[in-house]
Image (cartoon, rainbow, N blue to C red):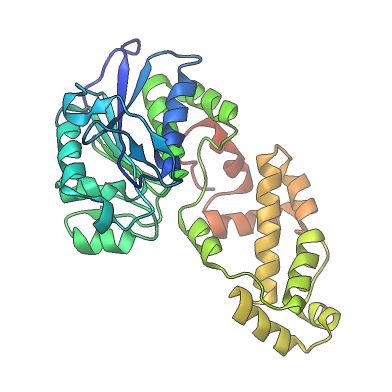
Length: 329
């Protein structure tokens, strides 16, 4: 069992940065801990590098650090962020040695995005469940077969190690750590202050799929997608959409498949789901969201949420109550 520490004790958070580090990978979690200090003081965030010199981030900005990892002392929690570079490029011997030193005495060892590869290379994740950015999950599983990779997880805890998916998922993980340290109410205050979800439903696949979907190339398809986005509540059929575009239903379906990798009906469904989810996020009721998004009934919307996220719309809204996954229903 992971050793506990008194709730009032100072928790030093050591974040290892390096040239090419993804800015949001470490800035997002750092802001969570700093924000938590506004109501429950106790975190000390310390940036370190392998050499003790400043580093250039992914956006080109140079940031200063407190010193070298080897001289930084003990940390309660260490954070190893990732990079836009492929892990084979940024997981250098220097980064590995700094990670090894920091992890040796830390109570919790965490990684953000492709930072998991540094932990994996040191054997820290052997026998553990872990995740990383969806772009790199196959490489992580292939290179390190002793790790049970969970490619769709936002973050994974396995004993005293914690790994998260890409970029913004580091915020999800940091909120979970705050909840672990100070309780759900404290984590909820931080999430509300930073205007982020306390616990997102679904996994990485909902983001990777949308990120890979190409934008419409032709004015015809773009006109249809714009119309659906502007008026999602209309009772669209493929025949009606095709008539609006002045082409056959078969031709329109072929264009949609080629340009947005979905049928017209699938595209309409995706737009409606996104609008309903945004409305629920803003505090609208399930009935209001279902009506505004164009679902025939609350039950119809519930079925869609269960298929897409594994939970009902009501449970989806309850994700603000805790970083723990909401139960399915």
